[in-house]
Image (cartoon, rainbow, N blue to C red; front, side, top):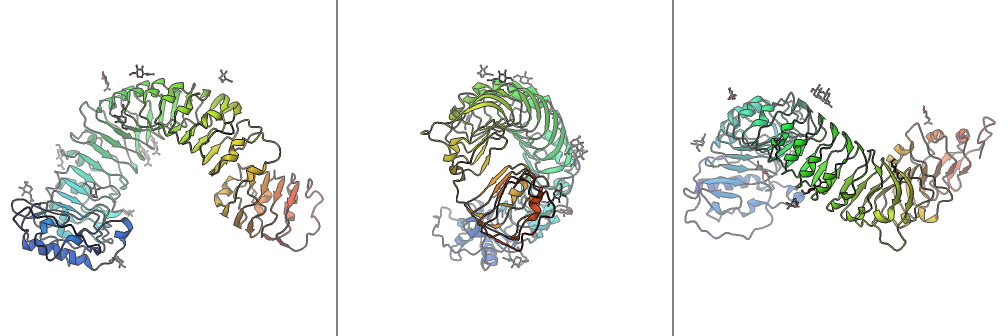
Length: 619
Ligand SMILES: *[C@@H]1O[C@H](CO)[C@@H](O)[C@H](O)[C@H]1NC(C)=O
Ligand SMILES: *[C@@H]1O[C@H](CO)[C@@H](O)[C@H](O)[C@H]1NC(C)=O
Ligand SMILES: *[C@@H]1O[C@H](CO)[C@@H](O)[C@H](O)[C@H]1NC(C)=O
Ligand SMILES: *[C@@H]1O[C@H](CO)[C@@H](O)[C@H](O)[C@H]1NC(C)=O
Ligand SMILES: *[C@@H]1O[C@H](CO)[C@@H](O)[C@H](O)[C@H]1NC(C)=O
Ligand SMILES: *[C@@H]1O[C@H](CO)[C@@H](O)[C@H](O)[C@H]1NC(C)=O
Ligand SMILES: *[C@@H]1O[C@H](CO)[C@@H](O)[C@H](O)[C@H]1NC(C)=O
Ligand SMILES: *[C@@H]1O[C@H](CO)[C@@H](O)[C@H](O)[C@H]1NC(C)=O
Ligand SMILES: *[C@@H]1O[C@H](CO)[C@@H](O)[C@H](O)[C@H]1NC(C)=O
Ligand SMILES: *[C@@H]1O[C@H](CO)[C@@H](O)[C@H](O)[C@H]1NC(C)=O
Ligand SMILES: *[C@@H]1O[C@H](CO)[C@@H](O)[C@H](O)[C@H]1NC(C)=O
Ligand SMILES: *[C@@H]1O[C@H](CO)[C@@H](O)[C@H](O)[C@H]1NC(C)=O
């Protein structure tokens, strides 16, 4: 504990009540008690919040620190969140983060008497959209100010510019906080000693000023999701101490990557969802310290430079959704620390480099939606830490590696929409006990081998085997009790639906999203459940359904007229529901309709003569 004198009263916060009495009283090691004026300032501050009722504490499970601040305790340097200067006993640090302070900071209270404060943390409180008090500018010795996530609103006060010794400023996650006057540019011109600046999720609404590149001590710059405009100055990448740069979530500012020099200290670079374009320079290979690199959903194009293999500290590489083309450089296989690799949704071609199978630390490998050819390297089964593997939407041929069951941790396996061929060994794939989602649709398998009856199978939530040349329903599906998504469309499954396939007792309303599927769904079979609410609406003009069975539920309302657009409909069973309507003579135009079951509902009125001769031609 350290101490200091006090005469400045400061800010005003509304605090949360402190109902859980704290019994921890630290033994006093220092002979000096804190300064009486500072003690009373702290008590006054506590008092200004004490009456406020709030739920933030309970909501986040925080504990009110101010509870340990007691009138009878002389030495405020022992209070929770308070630190004093060892020599003089002045309060130098106040950490009231997550302290359940709730309500506006107002000018009744008194923190500013703590004149020697060097560190003030009020993060994770709820100041009810009040303004940052301008009196904060009197705390001129502050080195660190943290007001993150505290529900401040409005323009930051110009008095902050007096805090010229600040090395760390965190105003993040105050979505209604604005930087207009002073702007970010002014701020940076005054606070020249900044090492850490975090304005994520505040409202900058301006270009990043060039002068940021003059902050020679800057170590971390976080400007995510803060409505940046204009162009981003590339000189910032050359700051001599910059280790962390986060510009993600700013879709407007355009920029490109500069040439990087050897010795650049950057460790983490996040440019996801930005408008950076151009190519990835070969000099990326000079960023020897880079461990996280994210350009997800930006606008980069050109090849991935093979110098990327020099970034041996990389643990996370995300190039998803850009326009990168050419081959995947085999040098990627040198990045043996990688645990996350995502090159999905680009224009990459050529084969999957065998060297990737050396990346044994990978837990997630995503190459989906490219133009990759050749076979899946058999040695991919060495990547035994993988939980996520997506190679779908490429042009891969040949078999699924026969040792795929070595990937014991796999949770997601996506191989759909390729040209994989040969026999689909579901008996092998379904040895993966942790598998949750399996997507195999649209390949060129000639036959499948199902798992044996007595084997233990993973419980899938998603299974897609559309367009897989199936001629019968795979039996193993009958043991799948957790399935939420099953796609067996575009197969050649004939014959009656086996009873187990209707193995459900669904309860609730038919989800409205089902209506979006009517242009791809062929069979909708929900009979014998406990579904209630309206008959599913079909929103698309195109309806491919040829069988609808929603019988034995408790559906209400009328029949949707859009059914008239299901021109392929052969079978409609709505028996035993509570549909209220007149006879649907408008269905007479459904040429293929053979079976129409309406029994046990609340139809009324006369059936009447057909309006034309060719109505219900196949009924
Ligand atoms: C927060 O502000 C609103 C409206 O400005 C007010 O109704 C509410 O009482 C305030 N809450 C606290 C805890 O002061
Ligand atoms: C900033 O810090 C320096 C040295 O630590 C000190 O001399 C100076 O008074 C401080 N500035 C202000 C405005 O307190
Ligand atoms: C501000 O405080 C929050 C909560 O304690 C913390 O997560 C964050 O890292 C702090 N910011 C800085 C720049 O230290
Ligand atoms: C951000 O500030 C700008 C101008 O200062 C304002 O027009 C805009 O509405 C603000 N955005 C949000 C989300 O508050
Ligand atoms: C930034 O640094 C450059 C070069 O060192 C200097 O010319 C310029 O005046 C500085 N800008 C500000 C606003 O300090
Ligand atoms: C992205 O930057 C380009 C220039 O490089 C510009 O033409 C385009 O309008 C920008 N996109 C957005 C969304 O601002
Ligand atoms: C990559 O590293 C090799 C040596 O390991 C070096 O010769 C080459 O210059 C580096 N390339 C880049 C672009 O850093
Ligand atoms: C991507 O960059 C190109 C060329 O600079 C530009 O025309 C295009 O608008 C950018 N795309 C987006 C989504 O910003
Ligand atoms: C792999 O990851 C572990 C931690 O998960 C780490 O200790 C190790 O250094 C990493 N690198 C290699 C090559 O295994
Ligand atoms: C995998 O790494 C080993 C050891 O570094 C190396 O000898 C081998 O050539 C690599 N394999 C591939 C396919 O790159
Ligand atoms: C799979 O396709 C490839 C390329 O089209 C072909 O060479 C191979 O014979 C096929 N394999 C089987 C088992 O059909
Ligand atoms: C059937 O589809 C056509 C367009 O293809 C659309 O104009 C019409 O409204 C649809 N009819 C019904 C009853 O939804």
